[in-house]
Image 1: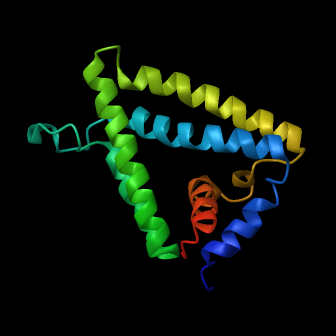
Image 2 (image 1 turned 135 degrees about the horizontal axis):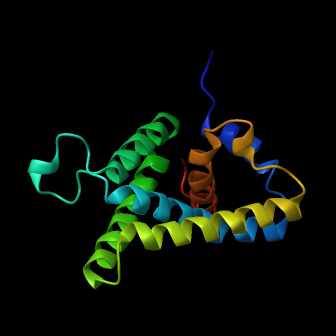
Image 3 (image 1 turned 90 degrees about the vertical axis):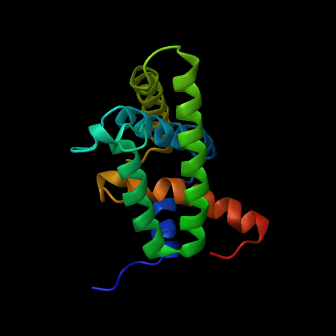
Length: 158
């Protein structure tokens, strides 16, 4: 079976994202969900890496790598953009860790729950179920759907 192109994914994803309020909530909530999901996994070291004494060998980084491989299959330019987004997310998490305000996972859990509530409110307003109810891969499509919109506005081909 041939793989879907990025635009095919975006067309299907857009069906559940027509309402202006839902779209606005997605612009706020999707980046927060991405950041908080990485943050939730950030403190969990990968098996066998404890002796490496590096804060970067964790499940959050593995999630980033797996996501980037998925994006790379769709578009080099979208993957490059998501690499920058991922680097920014890591920067935010490292900066938060350095503040000493509390564990990253606690702040991430709060943000994750609030952002998902926002997503579901948006879909309630839209009157349609979230796309990932049909295909779990749509959880990976949401962030690049937003990025592709930015690219189109800037005239960047992907």
